[in-house]
Length: 395
Ligand code: ADP
Image (cartoon, rainbow, N blue to C red; front, side, top):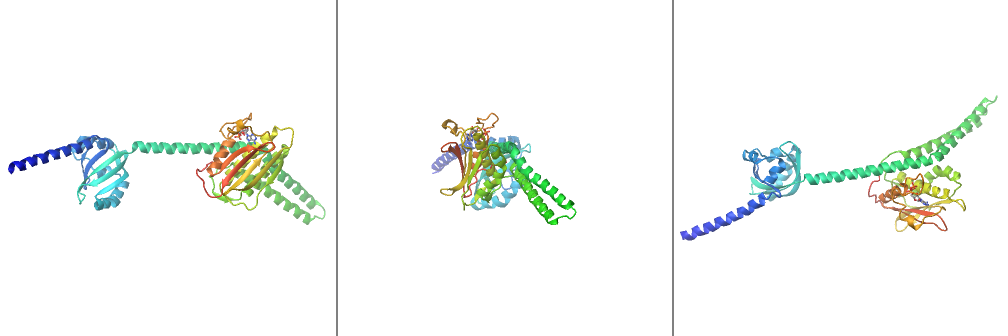
């Protein structure tokens, strides 16, 4: 009987030893940080992986200097005590969560940690910790390169618009000079009416009205230019695409005359409002018009006609088409038009269509080019009426 008892005790002992060896092996392989703790904050045992993570050594552990309450920064401790401790007491374990520990040198290490209690009172337990430093750094790097990408896109979009504005400055100057010349003429007329022996106040009043009208017009042109050049964050309005088109036409009027280009517009009625950044999409339209004018400048025979049309497109899109009667597009260039830095102009940047497409796509739309019949090119922009802004095209 006694013999049998001793034998089974020995077996039990061997089994326990084997089990402990397995657990030790698990802890000591140091794949993951591992420590046992008590509720007073004491870290009783820890493997090298954990000690390494927090920058302490075995001696610190042996002298009881490792305390998880001290290792936890105040803002995390508050959450640990108020939220996690009651949860641990309830279920005996905690699903992995992220927190930080102070290293011995005072810096912080981000960790993913899972916890299990040994008993119902949760007076002691075990914790597994994974060092998240590398992952956090990779995340920060990804965020930084995303930020740089956006910044670059913003700078390019801005640079491009400034360049476009440079090309358009002649026509803008004309737009502003015209009302200013009219203001001067009317002011002179008013002065003359006042200078006569019997001043004609009716005429003076009319001249003053015209001055106010023309002054307002000049102010509006300047306002429009300013919104086009300014670096403002993209606005998500719902706006009337026809109105947006009508607003850019005065800016190109003088350029059309200078190039002897006729303008046709075919704007559809009753189009739904488009969600997006009106100024950015106007920039796209201006780019397409400037390109069309450039293309037709090289054509000496035949008519020069620019057509701007709007319409509805299935199922829920609004479209804008800019057509010209220039030399058109051959199939080889069709593939490359929208690539950055593709240009056939001696002073071209080759960024206009690339940026235009990125703006349109950021609105969930498409920008494409096809040959026009019988000659020239058609650029077509389709925009969804439902809000689908994916990436904010900042400026
Ligand atoms: P850039 O105007 O600086 O050259 P873009 O991206 O605006 O850059 O245009 C790239 C190229 O696409 C132009 O250089 C031109 O060769 C071609 N292109 C653009 N619009 C037209 C058009 N309406 N007709 C013919 N070719 C065009």
